[in-house]
Length: 153
Image 1 (cartoon, rainbow, N blue to C red):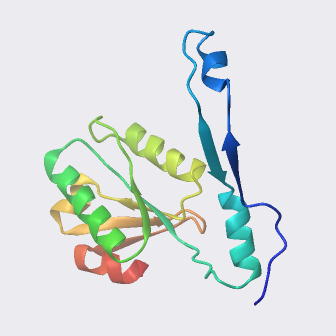
Image 2 (cartoon, rainbow, N blue to C red):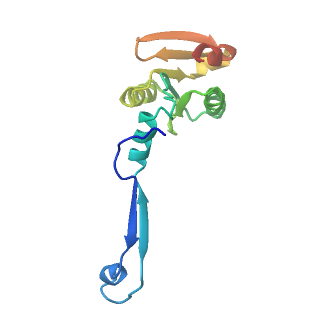
Image 3 (cartoon, rainbow, N blue to C red):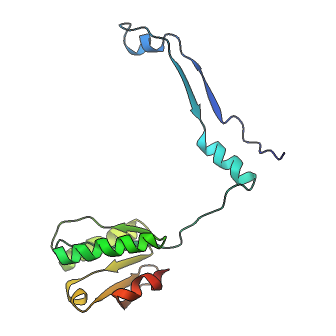
């Protein structure tokens, strides 16, 4: 049986007088507790080859604007991309569409180290299109609604 040297992964015991100490002497009850060192368990599992590394190379921000049709599209694409197994976050904000709000959302995406921003803007949305901005390469594509998920997967 292979073993991994990571030290103790759990601990616990009785804590006589703890409740009394914490309650200022008003209550005295017996206490017991336990804890697990999840970081040590994960390290042991990695050392024994029991985990598979699941890394998300893409992190996508879906823009969100207050206009009901755009909001519905943002939620739709967030759901579809998540169902495809991608790491997706929808920006939350109730401000109407404006260039300043879009800049704020893209700035947020960059601070969160997102790789892509899916921009669902009024003009493109009426034509059945969205803009996909690659934040690492500073490139932008215009895609039809049907092309979004296949392009990112």
